[in-house]
Length: 334
Image (cartoon, rainbow, N blue to C red; front, side, top):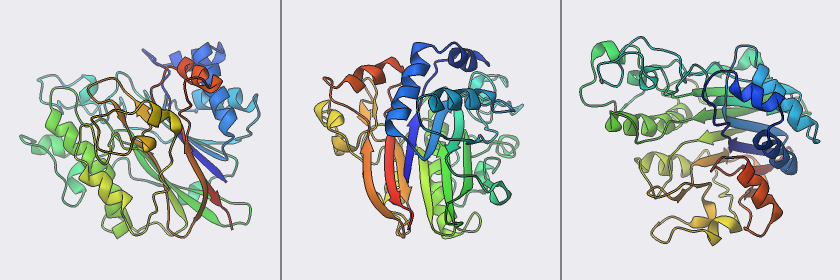
């Protein structure tokens, strides 16, 4: 079974624009569908696709992908925090209606959120959604200087969503998908708030596996998502990512690519072969996308789709408009 995670970017300016691009079969959406079809996933986790109540955008994109081969009939998108107003001045700039005052940073409700497409059905009766958990309720939460009680009473931990979504496998067993997307560590008017929140969004999973924020997931499971956090380089508090990568209940298959090595940042300390995004300076190339299976699963293949510049796939990937590269992991179902 192949699991793919990809942070896509429709570069939208308002609600409905991503759907319009898909319906019009714009070059960027066609290129995204081509890349996904090339990878032929059984489970596809997308970050950066707009949320709407009836998953119309997601289903339209699913149909565009299916026209090229992969059949992913089951679609799910959790209601995200991105862009949904909190009603408070969360970033302390004196204005309560900005994109950084929403439960998760976004210019409009549902912008650049999370979705899952699958060859296998979901067991929605067993879904666990932690997205509304308050940041202050995380054990050892870092929070931020100057945080007021009125802010902390509404400030959610998740920038987008944290979910535990089981899928039913052909043999009747279930595989839990632990899915999330964290916000970037440094941006806006309150950088220490966002840096600490980014840390805690990844630290959440360490607490869940320990049973301190809910029942730990029963294996087998796979943790999938974008942490916006490299274990060695770039902004952010790297210890949260390193703790998760070394967790005894998880394995890090370390997907790699030759393209990342060819475009390595010489001043970075982490291994360039595992990088998943080619941001401009000062961040540079980093590893910020992860697929971490539980220890009991057997990994049979991995990779980051970061082709060499002379590979035709490199041109198609450039047409998508996203700096992020798809990450894939193959696991044995037996």
